Length: 57
Image (cartoon, one colour):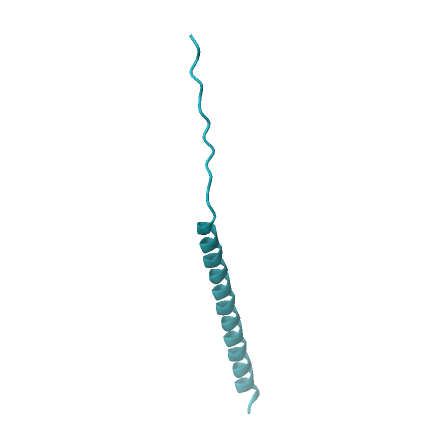
């Protein structure tokens, strides 16, 4: 195998490796976001309400 072909194959292997790692990272990030959103839906939200007093005459 000539050096030019070897360089091309090594470069292609690196590109494939980087792309695979990027896709795996993106998948993990989206899975984490989806899990966080689902967990947030299960938590009840309490909104404090303050009653305002009417001014006494």
